[in-house]
Length: 390
Ligand SMILES: Cc1cc2nc3c(=O)[nH]c(=O)nc-3n(C[C@H](O)[C@H](O)[C@H](O)COP(=O)(O)OP(=O)(O)OC[C@H]3O[C@@H](n4cnc5c(N)ncnc54)[C@H](O)[C@@H]3O)c2cc1C
Image (cartoon, rainbow, N blue to C red; front, side, top):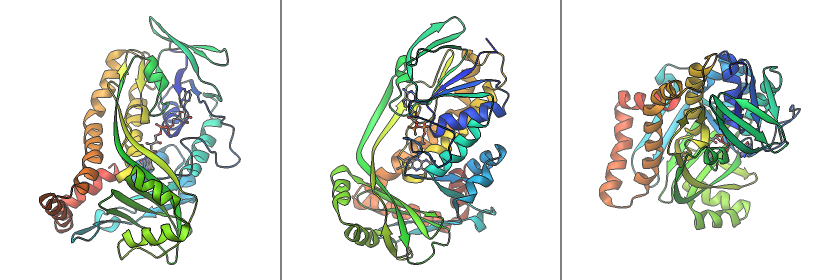
């Protein structure tokens, strides 16, 4: 079945990136099935993945994009992160991680998802080895001895030695493969919007732990910042209902004193923070990736960066492999990724919890945590390296 295409269901950030990585690692044919229309973009797209959000790309993800020949195009409309400023409202303990201290040019870069989509889809459509079926969805799948037969809603039928589920946290493909998933509803939502500033942000990203939940301000080009503001669902509903000037005042009051003065806010959107974890990521002839495998809290901007590390390992393991769907091959991939996935998922789960607890002992220890990070460069450096994906 080596001449048959590998089939990816879901053309979001994970699916599009994986198609390109598979081609780079020797896969001859890839078919990408996406339920939303995807056309050769002459302007940035708008799909559930490539929407109004922005993504903080780690230095490691930028290296991967460079290898795909896409780094320069991404950087054209991205803001470099030179410093990360972490603080806790009304408490001592601020820590700064800087590119200079880490001996790198930048800690990462922030790009609007629409631009990321524009660049990824542009590359996808110019690759003859990638065929896009959009809008289309799986109508049914049938297990064969050496792969899967896939029937699409359009009536087309395909056989593949490896079916890849990249169709998001509510993945239908994962369900059809018989893989269950655990959901953890945090009861919180994230409010996202773009902000304009009175003064330049100087490449500083702010991470602020508030009693309601963490807040992040990420640098964007043109003296703007991307806001990710999390809190209990009813609280976020109230922030959504405020006028622009009211919400800006509430936000500025929660920002650290060092943050720039906020002058405007764009369209506000909210995302429920339901963390999903697939109970298995590989079965014979199928693999689950991206949000379908693990949906993380956006607190440290790690979801896509973790996924990129998964996708590189997967492409290296199955790309050009004569038997890409064998369970031993897929297990080797899963084992390779287990440690990093567990560490990042647990961290992004317990950090917001830790900072939310009100008891004095916890308040003291999280304060100590920030102070410790600031006075122990080794500890801070280890933390920064992990966040940079290096
Ligand atoms: C507020 C917020 C901020 C974030 N910030 C960061 C950050 O700064 N850095 C970072 O690394 N990560 C960040 N993330 C995480 C990042 O957004 C996710 O890792 C990423 O979206 C995962 O992409 P995905 O392609 O797996 O899933 P999705 O984005 O959900 O895409 C799934 C795709 O599958 C398609 N699809 C669904 N069902 C079907 C079907 N049946 N058939 C065909 N196609 C289908 C959908 O249309 C969609 O295009 C953030 C997340 C949130 C919510």
